[in-house]
Length: 137
Image (cartoon, rainbow, N blue to C red):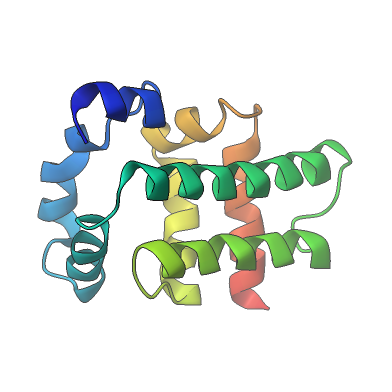
């Protein structure tokens, strides 16, 4: 996609700005190679579909979070499983262990937590907790 299309699809998040770090940290992994292979073929419509799927998961998580639902509740963990399945569908085989590591990063890395928390304050930590609970299930 050209820069204007990326802005329209991703908003102020530009994934191109993270490519070097991704390759430094995970470039030698099968998951990174698989993700690069898959995403290189995606059209704008694919990225928009991914966004809609993530928005649906986030909306459901926010509803649970606002209701005070525990992170280890069945509904919350089922959403974590949907989140994990979405990564597997679009990027790479995301095992529960990999997913758990991602969840930790979502809460610990301010770049991720600030971006996730745009949907609702505290969502990054709640998502991290839900993913951790699901990984232990």
